[in-house]
Length: 189
Ligand SMILES: Nc1ncnc2c1ncn2[C@@H]1O[C@H](COP(=O)(O)OP(=O)(O)OP(=O)(O)O)[C@@H](O)[C@H]1O
Ligand SMILES: [Mg+2]
Image 1: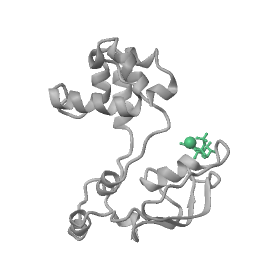
Image 2: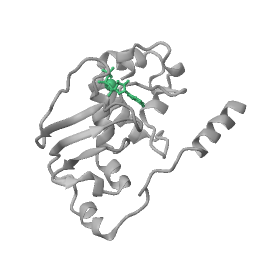
Image 3: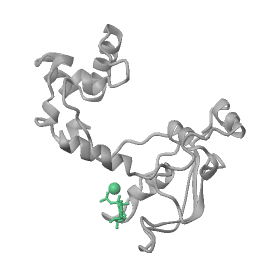
Image 4: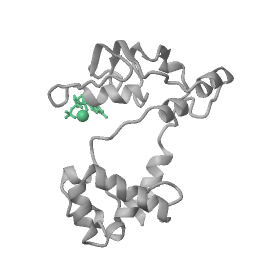
């Protein structure tokens, strides 16, 4: 219980991000027009470092990805691949350069719009304590109705038929995953 208190205290001490709830009227058109329209991403001369005075992690980084294009970024461990994504969500501030999505400089887009309109799959997979259903239907309604159960099961059958087969022997969506202890890394994903 004291650990929970400590965590809350740590969160209280986090400096709030700028602009989190500023919804300038000039951005209404972005929301209403369905931005990003094509998904073209452009990095121009981006420099980023994690802390003041530390060496640059991204140095004059340039990249142009067309809308609908799939691109793999490869590099040794620690070379900065995940850091590129952090800048795209503005989780880290860039020191210089610009990042544009469909020609819109993301530094001018309110954070809540930016982060609602793009998505990422994290490197680490997380399994929550609870049942398979708890882990597949984690929207606020909590799932549990017949329709969302059916959708979740169908999705599982498409993505991982062998897992669906295994879970169907163990109570289906009711199966307790025990925090993922008996799943491989790939199966968690
Ligand atoms: N929160 C952080 N604070 C300070 N330095 C960091 C932080 N996160 C990453 N770094 C450093 O930034 C550099 C790039 O890390 P990054 O996580 O982008 O690498 P990566 O290419 O994704 O590696 P991997 O293939 O192992 O996932 C590394 O030198 C790393 O030590
Ligand atoms: Mg990484």
